[in-house]
Length: 499
Ligand SMILES: [Zn+2]
Image 1 (cartoon, rainbow, N blue to C red):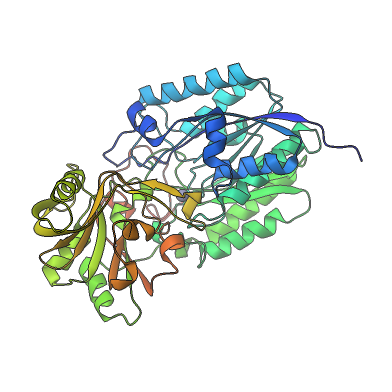
Image 2 (cartoon, rainbow, N blue to C red):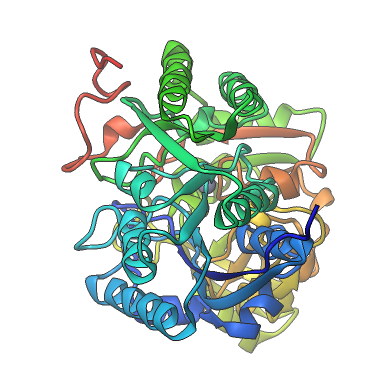
């Protein structure tokens, strides 16, 4: 057998999950602060990582006959929608890179699948169309999306190959991207002919029920894996969707890609959607509020207890400045708790005071939407750091390097410990506590501002995990939000929805 044909494949992307209810808009400055990686810098940043870009690069390296052309990539911390101006910048950046660096046999696109802008509901579909227009109809385009993607027909039409992660917390970004990489290379060499079927499901799933290690999502993913293993199937996915994006395509969906068998792709995608739909009664749940959660933590035998601040889920676009659980701990006399709060002014004051310094601080509720007022307290500085740290192991979505900006550990007069940061930081690893000199295992309760994403990093450390029903723009009860654009009917908000 002859060696694989040498091919030229472009790599670019814009990775963002947009919460329509979040106060922070993504403008050009936000994107620049997150990092815009180009050319060799892109490869240096992502080669060897567990991220989607890391998976695309690994696939090209493993193939040995792929000239990978790194163009431009930004990966953002979830926040509100992108401004029209910032989306125009991205589109221009994509077009410029594709024009300058082409022609290609294939293009690999790093996208989240739930990006929204002020002027475009389906940013991911829009960017895939920009790529398609630039490279023409015959170049193979592949993308590997987050499990929270709100997949649209437009995305499936513009891309030849599309899959999603199958884990939440997301610890398989790299292998799922490697799969798309291999398939794009095979299609570019004419060895396969992908045909995609997209089956939207008129439902979303409560954020609390999205962990793929437990039912119902473990059952859904087992169906996906079984479908993907059938002969002639190139890849299969069920997206959980992202319920905080107020757009028509918000919700779950099934996607099946076959090798040149469109009818089979249709049949399997609809069968997968049907099996998801039959499980819908398990898509809802209820969990304790702050005070009840603290009572459970106070009585727990195995500590630390991880308290998940669902309403201030940073990975879902929340601002990471809520003090709802800290406030409840102060009010109920629960002293042995640590929480990380984005509080730039308190962090600056603590750095000026230095370790051992005593100061009056105001913590939390930076944005006007805040659900409880800030906490004002007397505090002693017990640790300081520049906030730059790196974690080992596979964290959610393959993140590894963090920059929280100048950070400090404060011990409040009421006993609780607060890590104040200058920048909003994804709550993925207890290394962030160690970075300011704390020993995470010493605490009875640790607050993490996430739902599933903290579990990959914090899971091995903690004795128990409690999801807490806290208020905020990522609150678990979506009936509290006022949607304008989502499709209707949509289960469970409209219980008479039909597949
Ligand atoms: Zn996600």
